[in-house]
Length: 94
Image (tube, rainbow, N blue to C red; front, side, top):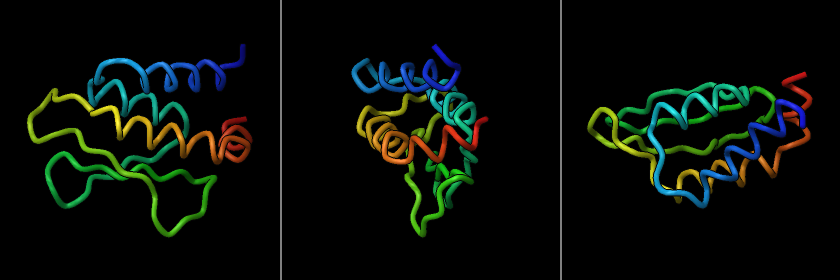
């Protein structure tokens, strides 16, 4: 199993598990090549990927308190984005 496949598997596992920590989720996205930007409001982040050219990128919320979990709908949204652009992201990571 390639490193990319391991990362996708881990992201897939998170879609059906309990909420995950913000740092774990963010680190996984960074490993997949995402650039994480803070939005104006506390805890909100935008996940941009250099291999995918879009006007609007997926976002997620880490909550307003340090260490708060990322809720499953955000994880599912990012997983769907990765699966939709899998070929471009995989090529970028080579």
